[in-house]
Length: 133
Image 1 (cartoon, one colour):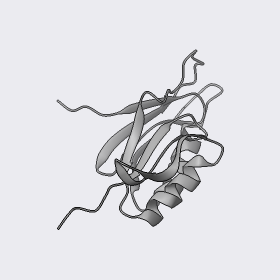
Image 2 (tube, rainbow, N blue to C red; image 1 turned 60 degrees about the vertical axis):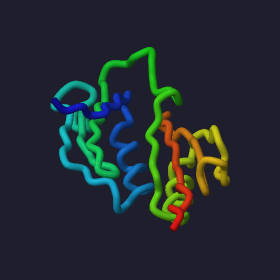
Image 3 (spheres, rainbow, N blue to C red; image 1 turned 90 degrees about the horizontal axis):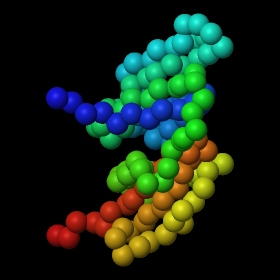
Image 4 (spheres, one colour; image 1 turned 90 degrees about the vertical axis):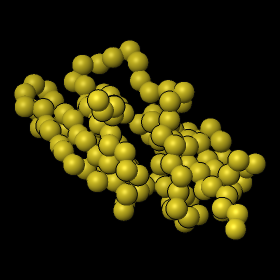
């Protein structure tokens, strides 16, 4: 058995992937792309698989409108390698998005922010405290 996180978009999956690749340029690898073959969505991204931090993800761009979207109750939690990576990702993902917890030090992380990107996907970006010697 294999379980894979699956995110369904309504017309902007390709734009989300482009944004995420800007946020994590060395850490997102797209492994599969499919495009819609007919209708109004012809030629637009239908589905994709990508890896982020060793986890495979799937995205789907629904040509059918739905009455639901993403919620902050489910988020992508990323332990960043260093402060520069976290700040860069927070800046890129925050463009047009919404900050739920501002970028700051907290009792649980040296640096942390929780935000949703312009596509409504929720991200928790963390810089863990260094391991004690």
